[in-house]
Image (cartoon, rainbow, N blue to C red; front, side, top):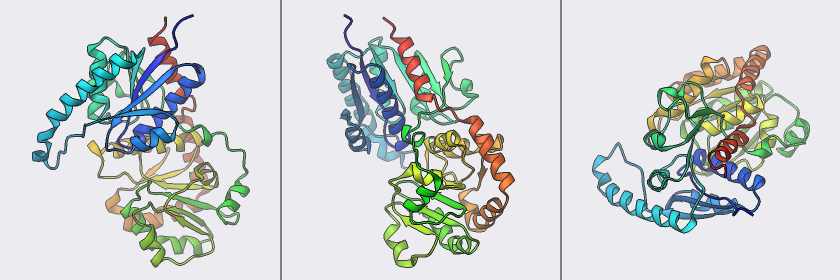
Length: 365
């Protein structure tokens, strides 16, 4: 019998890199229950907790990204890169992977470079409509590049690029609860519902705009489910009194239920979130973060706006535009349905399966 497959996977720094990596690992394990999977990440980033929580082992590398705002702080980078490249070679020699998979983030660089130097098949998964520097740098070394957006052949080889979409969490598609049951789980009545997502850490600008808007939305007869992020929940709870139709907390532990409740989603424009909204066919107002590398959230949001699959508000325009934009959209059911239809047409619910198909094709024995 052939030996079980072995995989090294690297993706981290943000949830947008980590969760696709976990989804790919889960599908590999589903198809090949005896396969061995080991993760590689940056030693001080969130993957060091999230990957073990998902049931996988991980090794941390001493690596950070380049700080473009403070160039003098990058003097350690050559030493970190050299250390991480040596460590990656040792990991590859130890685990002898059949393939190495990178979903972006600092640690992908040295691991995939070491894999290329040892002639091990490489697959890159790019989540955004504007690729990050690590994936652009490594793309020439990869056998397959799985992308979520059309038109990335201006960055990657046409022959090696596969349009798969982004992996999404399976629990989003498997919820059997009715919308009414989901609303009850948040203590809400059956009314049109606005879901506000600022990310796990929260978004200061979105929270600030919501303080000025949520009461008027409640008065219009809408529910508001508001994820504030951990950094802002204490201050907001001191300012905002409980109200009928309002659910507010730092995190949403029942995201499938929250999304089923939502008639409209207000959100950042991270690639993972957008992919989930597309697969579920949700109308959305996207507010790209201006603080991410290479402004990729704005590129992501514009791709949906071009297809009339979402609206976009720049963070600088939130205070003047958020309330009226959302109110008009909530009162215009036909426009919301058009956004939902166009978003759904962009969705790729089989993305994870297509990515693993590409991995299997690379390593056919």
